[in-house]
Image (cartoon, rainbow, N blue to C red):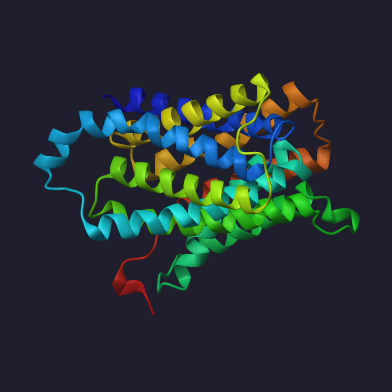
Length: 296
C-alpha cells in the first residue's frame, strides 16, 4: 500500500468514527447506554473473528500466538474500554455530538500527561500544546460565561481519560501480541461487562424497535469492526505521528454530523474552541517521549 493509500484509509476510519457519534446519540432514544455498548461491541468483536482466521498464517510467521499474557492484557484493555465507552455514552445523552467528538479527542493530549507518571519526559513544546487544548475546552464547554462543566461534558471528559489509559495499555500489548487478537478479546470483554451492567441497571437487553437495531448494527459493524480494521491496515504503512493527526479528524467529522443531523449551531466562541482543541491535540503529536538520556 502506498503512503497516499494508507492516508486515505486512515481518513476513512476517522470519518466512520466521527459520524458514529451521531449513531450513538440517536440510539439513546430507544435503549439504555449499557445495552447499546454491550450489543455494538459484541457485534464488532464477532465481525473481526473472520479476520483473525484469515491472518492466522501471518501471526504464525511472526510467532504471535494466543497466550495467557495476551488474554490477561487484552482483558484489562477491555475493562478500560468498557469504562471509557460507558462514560462517553452516558455523556452524549446530556451534551452535543460536537462536544462529545472534540472532548473525546483530548485523549491525545492526556496520553503524554499520563505518561509523565510512567517516567516519560517531554520537550517543553508539549505543555504549550496542553495549554492550547485546555483553552479550547474552556470555550467549547461555555466556562468563559462563568458556568461550570455540565454533566454530559464531565462524563465525556472522564471517558477521554479512560481512552488515554487504553492507548497506553494497548501500546504495551501490541509490541508483543497480535493487534487483531487483542481487539477481538477486548471487544468481547467490553461487551460482557456492558451487558452485565445493563442487567444490573434494569435496562431492556433486547430492543424491540427496528430503528434501534439500525444504530446498533451501524455502530457495531462500521465503527467497531470496519473502523478498527481500517486503522490497522492504514497504520501499517503510515508514520505514527501522521496517522495520529489524520485519525484526530474524527472530531471534525463528528461536528459536521452534529450540524447536519441535529442542527447544532456553533457560535464563534465554540468554533474557536474547536480549532484550539484540535490544534492543541495535533501539536502534541510533534512531541513524543524524549530518549532515556534526556530524562531527568
